[in-house]
Amino acid sequence: MRITHFTAPSRALPVRGHPAPTASWREAAAILARAALIGVIILFGVLAARAARAATVSAAGLPVETVAIATATGPVSFVAEVVSTEAQRAIGLMNRKELAADAGMLFVFEREGERHFWMQNTYVALDMIFIGADGKIVSIAPDTTPLSQKIISSGVPALYVLEVVAGTSARLGIEPGQSVTAPSIQRR
Image (cartoon, rainbow, N blue to C red):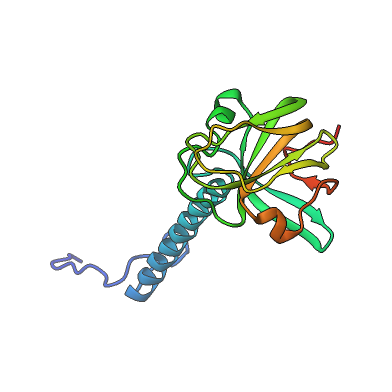
């Protein structure tokens, strides 16, 4: 018998007893949709990781943490930029035109001692809350004058200083003797 005419099968031939896979356009679309969903999930994870990092670093590139004060009426908290080097402390909040009501700056020093500040090049009136090594408020300099060169002293040894918007201490009942907690405030 001679084969004079050959026609290819309309379906793929099975390999080793298994039928050949056939993909309809619906199956192909489903595969593509799953791949796109996986891509979106990965992208969301990357963006969430970046957002989490951004939440711990300010626009000025400084670390940010929550500072809580136990007042007589309950705890109050601030989102504070942390300055812990001499260069960072020298700049502080200088040249800032505004500060949110729940924001602040936490100055961290190496050793406890009397602290001296001024408001030169600082446009926002501040309350300066001086905190001892034990994490308790030792003094407060309320309502400082913007752009002033007058020296503002803690009057007593302090290891930390929290600067917040002027009037905040009075408004929230923040007073000497109250405890302050933050990741950078280590009780000694």
